[in-house]
Length: 262
Image 1 (cartoon, rainbow, N blue to C red):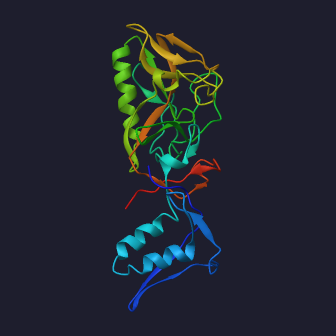
Image 2: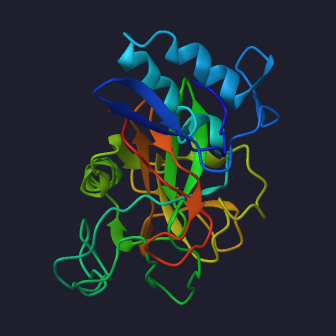
Image 3: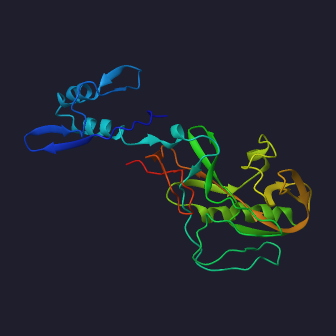
């Protein structure tokens, strides 16, 4: 993936009589940074070299982007919060009482919030990095945005869980699905990517009538009938950028921003 996260923002101006630049408080040749190849150069020297190629405006502008953006894949680590926004609920629905139904959410509440599906609850909310793989970042809901009622029919339940995840896609998402055992099997039971303080389904069959689920203590188990949490997983598009960390829609203060490449 692309270059590192640089904290210097350079303002480039294209004027009628050629190309010039302005850099706030960067008038000294002593202000330097490290290039991709490891070489140390001054900001002024790098810009002077680019400006000599005044006919290559696109190249100049492309270099400028490196001072402001970084690839999300390079910036994040597993467990980090990301300012992904799956929108708000446009209606309210009670906790489901029939097999195959979802519910437990409230109109106008952000989908990054968590709901209560049983006697246990979770304070976790927002979206976190589940894994990084083949140049892509995968996010999982930190808690559970809604509940699902499963009884007996595992084939139907797995289909419904995966299909429901599509409703959490936005312009940054490539695809979506339910969380599965493979996502968390290498995580310790106390890891709060796995142990969220309440129960949630995995889209994995234990038997003809039973699905796997994660207990509130983080341990793997299975059951044939329950109203339990649902956790969507979102695969982000390749080459998503970030400008750094800040608050997300549900109050996490250090969530990585998302920017689509031009």
